[in-house]
Length: 467
Image (cartoon, rainbow, N blue to C red; front, top):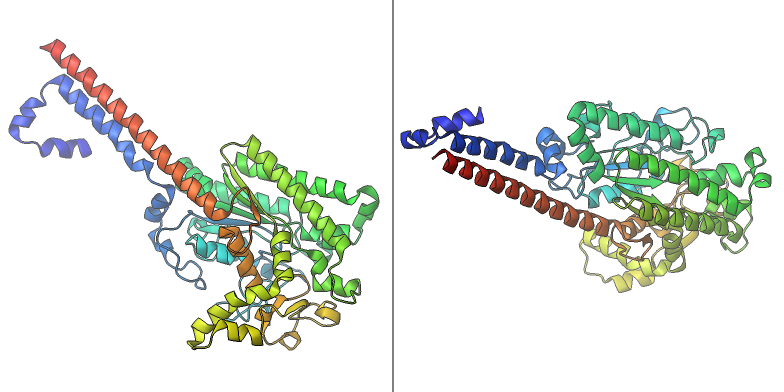
């Protein structure tokens, strides 16, 4: 049709000019060669054209996404640290679908997030210009629901299949990986291979898992594991298992991965209560294990980056970032103070406010729970919760507050407060990808121009020979 339209639009002298077979052939070849230029768009632009309604709020609860997102989609694999509602659909004690969970969230209602407000991937999604990512079990299974990303995380899940099983049902790491592959297959069937692979390779994959392998497996000595594995051997086993799963993602065309290390479990209110800490000091034997785990994971990521040269895998040390908050909790008061003062439009200075209520002034007790450090009984009632969660580091027995999640997400995105991501932060990864994509487009266009020039020259010589 495009060629027919071109012929109809030509004036009579031009039609006569086209009667030369060589010249006609050259024009046809040029049209065929130039037509792929439209396919050189950044994959996100193609997604926007196919699904324009997805530029609006995808799930009704997140702020409006950026019309020019920095990545096509965000996919999340993990445990309760990033579960946004998966376990609402499962038979388990590990649920966060009742108040006071979610009381400081955008809707003021519980969503299944193990926090008073947002979890880290909510902040990451907004930085990427995307809506909050929906739970895999909480959407219809259509491409429309998943094109901007999916959250597969399930509270209680671990790297080991049986970790957390005493809590009830959960979606293990291997099961989440199967859900990821099912999603990819749906993309391929709905969008075609090229568009699907473009979406997958340019998207961000965020992995946060491993705490339940300690909380509900190693530290409980499940299956007599402590007699089978010394801590360092156990950590090596976990890291190698994770390595295989990341390689499986790579084989499925995933190229951008954020691997989160574990937070300092030895400082969690549950272990302060269990070990009867007298002064609120963290349990160093537990934190030493977490330190070894994070080291093994970082080394594993470095190995993969050396092996998979076209992949970008970053490791973010949540232990390092969290300990900076705990040790320097007063320093973070100014950030919280500034946002509060803007919201109430007051002339008071942060210096004055911080003297009255400095930063995180409760570093050991959970905001919600019962017992010493509020770590004995889990958060199950609004009556068990404190009034001001933003002054606490810990929300419940194991999970940080919205305020801490925001700081850690800032560090993952831009190293705003402390450098905890290696070899780069997520913002740098996005910038590097944009630069590489721009270079690849220029190379493709240069090659295309060369081929067009070659065809025209060949056809011109053919025309001269005809004369």
